Amino acid sequence: MPEKILIVEDNPQNMKLLLMTLRPHGYALLEATDGEEALEIATRDKPDLIIMDIQLPKVNGLDVTRKLRHIPAFNHVPIIAITAYAMKGDKEKFIESGCDTYLSKPINTRELPIVIKKMLSGRKEDKA
Figure 1 (cartoon, helix red, strand yellow):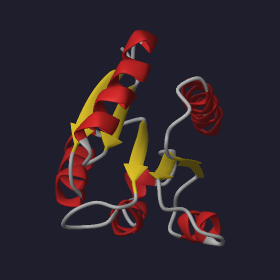
Figure 2 (tube, rainbow, N blue to C red; figure 1 turned 90 degrees about the vertical axis):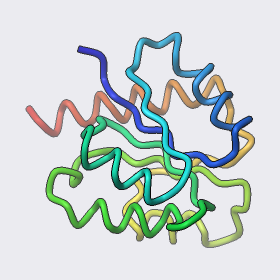
Figure 3 (cartoon, helix red, strand yellow; figure 1 turned 90 degrees about the horizontal axis):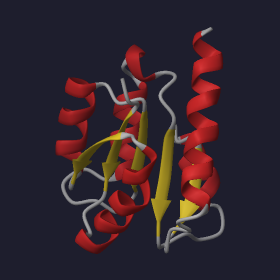
């Protein structure tokens, strides 16, 4: 069964880029375009990893991450924060909110699959 990745991104061009980058790797890809939808899909479909845009309509990515981290099933689900608006100290804020790592936009399409593979293999080790 392919690993499920939830992509939370409100910008259609960025969503398309993420989908095109990850589709060849055989993941089952789920899509959400705002924070409320992300919470709904995550709790229903239990993804193995989440790519979380920080600037989202309705509920921002940090608040979604905090809410997910309060659900025991999401304690070990890797969450990758992505944003175009990173300032000094933001990476620490993302990590404190429950994100496991952070990537800045524009997304490096060569780096992203490597980061995902590493995070998913680390998750398997946690379960063992």
